Length: 216
Image (cartoon, rainbow, N blue to C red; front, top):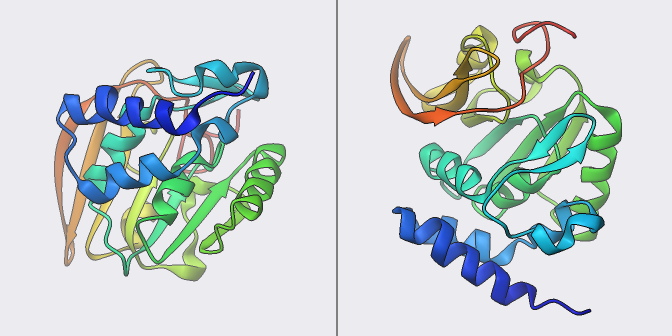
């Protein structure tokens, strides 16, 4: 059965994003262009554009489209930006960001997921995504500072290393709280001061690592 993926993406953008108040034209265009079905298990192909998170193996998920879009809008990405993503997972969030910024640096602690995402980036010719396997909770100091940092797992608190690697004027988007419930926080750096606001309640898989929940 051949599915009409462009139509499914258009419906997803209209019903799940635009109608919920997300209006950033560049972000919506990125969601129209990135083939979400390529980032899910083929067995779940029919649910690729559904309004929910889906399992991708190893206890991880590809986030609900609305949450990916909300976090992307909160980051307020610009074309010249260098963005760090903590938690590559399926690679979908990095693919969305690749359409919006100059370079995406993404870290994944689970090697098979990182390898799968790397192969997809190559197949989709996303040449501005640079990936590695490692502890994302401590960031990626080699390429810092970043105009944006986005964390796709729930932290017990905001990792100090990520704050330190944020450029002046840059934004950090991170879920923080308990393992069961978090708040999506948006932190903007102003010199040595950090402005913080809460966006919404959310639930993500735990951020594991030195400045996360440890190495379970």
